[in-house]
Image (cartoon, rainbow, N blue to C red; front, side, top):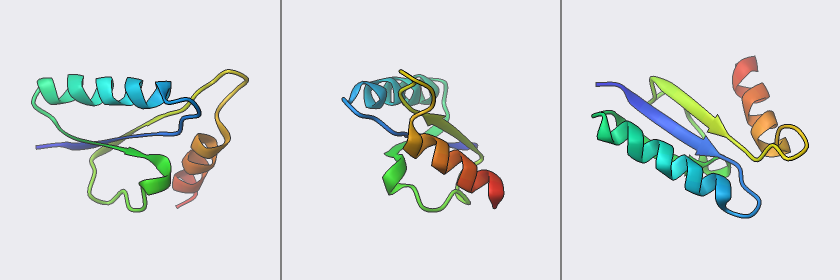
Amino acid sequence: MNKILVTFATESGSTREVAEEIGKTLRHNGTLVEVHPIRETRNLSAYDAVVVGGPMIMGWHREALQFIQAISAS
């Protein structure tokens, strides 16, 4: 069975709420899902897929963008 990580950066908490809803929907479809803040995410090897979220008021949230750049470089 696939295991998906939904990870997020947030300022006011609304992105956390969205991430949790995404996780809930994926679980409803039978997928193993973990939802964690980006700052708690260290190792992606246990996951088959990763969903990254962040607020986009004026472009990508810096923490989310740095996370994506780091995993793309590895």
